[in-house]
Length: 221
Length: 295
Image (cartoon, rainbow over all chains, first blue to last red; front, side, top):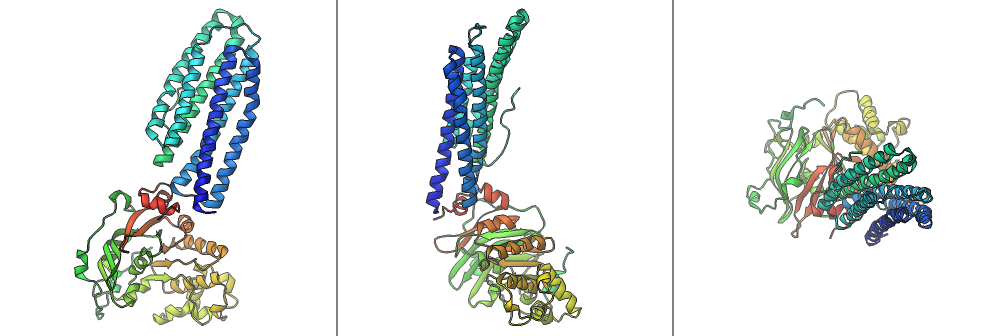
């Protein structure tokens, strides 16, 4: 295989990783929509689609391992492949969190609504913005943007704190809400974890460009 | 390793021609980016200052300044014709044997300028041994190959012990101990190269220079030599020229990247720990070379 073919394959695994990112973003978006709109069919689709995400992750991993074995990549090429290998794990775990939200959406669909959803969709919006921005930072090799994305994790943490306290108030005031409120804290927790995993993606962008591995933003949770 | 007495490099009776060309120091300098050239923190065995080199009118090395740390493996990498082998051969004055060469700058070995007039190049080459690209055993027995350098140097100790020690150090003893009278040329290529390493070790050098020592060997023989290099570095300083970047990455502690300019003169572009150079090279040209996008 010539270097031209190698370069083509290197580009392809990065494009596949970005495609996996859009699958994960879609899973998060649809899981929250399913929760808000009490749409069980949509939630079940998100749950079923998680297997596709997992398959895609393993396909990319296989291709990365083959490139390492056949091409012995070095320097920027090596950092790109190593970054992809780490990022696909985080993306796959984000999809698991979306699947978790979808499962809760199924469970809550038969229950009367506890409250209008405001902060949870807001958390999802920020987390999704972080995810797409981190992947753009990867595509553009932009460590400054990756660092800026990490700072948004504080906003997600603050929203999580707010949601948690509010749900706690519901539980204290009316024990009949405990089960629903607990499920909603899990939803918020899943979103908070998604944002944390986006910071891992950002750390890999910095590593890819600058060759330094460092923790960019330590989450409160 | 104990400090060697470098005064032995300059026996009082020796008068050697100085191959340095004082005017050559005026040649134009192309300094590489300062931050791409590491200064290793370990004690330096060699210190090169503005080393330039000419074959006749053709300049092949330009203002190389770097140091080689003691008891480490340093790899010299770069495209064909970049001057890396010439640089290696400057370290033990092997280039003196070629007519019409000129050297400018300083090559200090243990603080001594090895190109000074009163330095004995034969003693330099004893201290700083060399292993070449193609295994080149003499048409003699294994024993005599290992003993050759020591005999030439008038070794008066127990030759059997020296031969065994050298062959053991070269990881060859177990394979040849029962057949030391066999001709060296009858060994496999990998064994012949280890015999040449044993021959170099028998004169008790301080440094081993290796000029593409595995390029004529198969992958298994190559890995044996590489394992041997990692063993030997506990006792010796090793500087290796290799075209094989994976080999440089596997065996060396430090790596230097040399690249020739349009006129063909080799410049030191980047020098760093092997880890840094192969994962995060600082210079774009290094990145392009090691990722195969050069040129």
